[in-house]
Image (cartoon, rainbow, N blue to C red; front, side):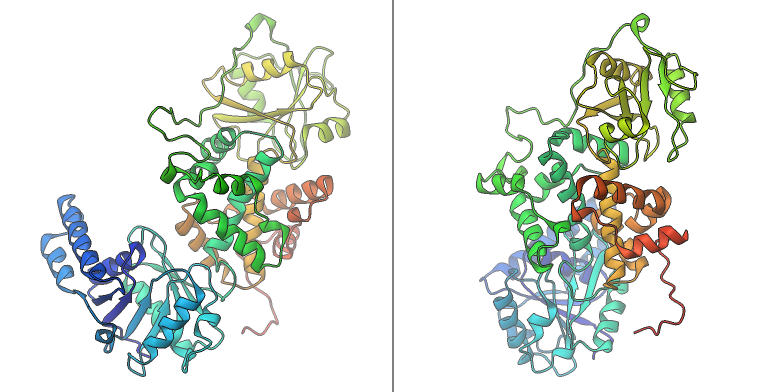
Length: 513
């Protein structure tokens, strides 16, 4: 295979094709663009000229560099002009038959040592290459939108792809300034596969009536640190993109309940409430609408009427910070070994709902409130009570825990609150990808962090939160719900039990493939 790629051909000059052309030209590679739509390649080049001009105006690119990059771009009226390209990347419609036909056509155009790559996000690379005479030179080279900013690319060898092809694309990814990760040809590869957990679990929480869209977004954004809540993200991406992807991965994994789509998303697709692009999705973006994900504020009660707070001892969390917070907020801490008759009982369950935890521990469910300490006390706190909780104690808990200027989201009774459930599912799914050896643990961690914009890679995040706690959350939710989607995978279970990092890939005695 051509290990030194000096000229790249791109077929399909939409957003993805143009983005790939931009980073290639900026990296010193000649780029020939072709599109079956008349004038589309030339229009893409003009669009890139405007992009480079903006980068210059912002001081992010030198004028000479922009001019040189533009000189490397060449729109072509005929696909035959790609004949001397060392690599041709197709970025056309996401349809198997169209990609198969194009790759087969390119085989008759390019030289014998040229590489043919597909930017598919969801289709099997093996299936795309199966009709080729030389499938060993066909591979996936999957970028993310916007290509210049999302500095990760999945390199996907099919069943017949040669090591030389894979290595050449890995070398090119580095030259382009992207983190290249080699991935098995499996549904969703790494990033689209791993990304299923965040949104599908959020949808399940709303389906169960635990919290609203805005409450879930507020918790995961403000308490956990995601850049956007899942429903904000759905609206930005468009449900016409995200929901079919979830459905496809569910079907490709033969209805594994971990990937089960939601009827909530399906209803919005049918109603054409797809998100920002249609003006309404989970939120209303119309001119008259006030877009907000803030939670409802409930008036507190007077300090003199506040009950003392008895903080339940926990085997899962150190509650010293919680006691300090209550005191800092002006609350009185009940220091008795058991709660006084009028005290608010504050407990920190892990993986349990308030009902199960209160009954197991023998606490009065009418005055017991759960607080999620999984990601620390923080300034945004999640509370939940049993269905029997007296409203006076709910108001007391909300009042005490907002007196320092913090915010509270009070959700319905749920195994694992919101943050625990979502983070446990994110980490567990990344562990499953590692278990299936779709990619190395480090590549999984980097790809998900960069490609999905998570605060940390999921395996590193699991280590920092505690793999043992992640395992406990899943085990308890699975036991209480009976739902197989919460089963802990062997990668997580073994490493958590042995006290090993989730990034640990050592298996002494195993012959590596």
